[in-house]
Image (tube, rainbow, N blue to C red; front, top):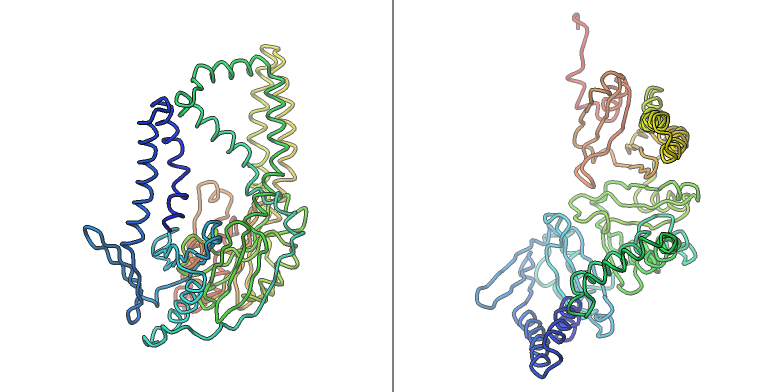
Length: 480
């Protein structure tokens, strides 16, 4: 850890150290200050290592950090929702790992992190903590290394399916992020590196005066989007494996930083299947688990990266449970609302552009008119697709709702996970006679919406799923 921590701090120290050397003219004093910065990083790493301890006492895990004052954090084992083991590159070279403990009480952050334990210790602690979390009545003698976990593979994602990565759009903006970061660093540290800000402005003005070069750069960045996006996707999802181990769903992935995420099966309440337009055309989807008390569910809850739709449904059914019913269609007025919102805004802009073009005769307004009419025409199939994506259903065991087009999501939730219903109706929905029905769930996002259902569906669907809640409040004839 005395090596890992300084290397990990190097990106934040690099520019200040370079600045010290440039400002000092590479004199012996500047080298001394730079060396002092490096020594300071090692001292900080030593203090962090020497003052941190962890211990399992009874049914709790205690982490202690003591220097001038002592800080003790106690985590009841029964509150542990998941334990992640990751091996960043430096840790992997030295045979170490990072173990993160999630209790779901800290939002997207882990409750505790043991940074720098050995791989064997990380696996031992992971099995021990998860086993003790599932059985809080366990006694202290179980701190001995448990027997090897029973493991059942569910799926190992073939590497050829990584080619679907650019379709997800998750990392497509990576080239622009790199360029933006480089420009920001140039403006922030340009003087120390001998690159003055007026030079940057001159370069920008020169590019502005040569728009074809600027267009070529933009085109190269656009062409690089699927390549860099696919590369980053492959790095994060390399050798993705989903398995069942001692009552937990375990997802392992990653090339540079290998990560293992465990989700307690008893706390899984369903799953969410997501796809975008490009993914839908290719027939692939992504899958997340809906888990009670899970922090950072967008990353920790991932069950599958982009895989063929049939495989995703089969894996979700095997790992969590199938949904065995068709989704019910929403009323025709929902289709009209989708079409109106997809087409009308562009028609307004087209009307304004036509008026401006008639008044001024400028070419720019005619180009804008043609562009907005084209976008309005595209809004028709988009609106129809958004309507076709709407749906809700109940198969006697699980509730399902679906919505979206550019990002379509279908949530499948166990009936026992539904903790309440909420009806929401905007002014426009009230005039159209539709509303949004939200199933409250103590897991995942906390609620999943059936958008633009009819008033009859909004009354009948909750009564069908949870009749024992609503029967006492249903209106009865006066003679009953």
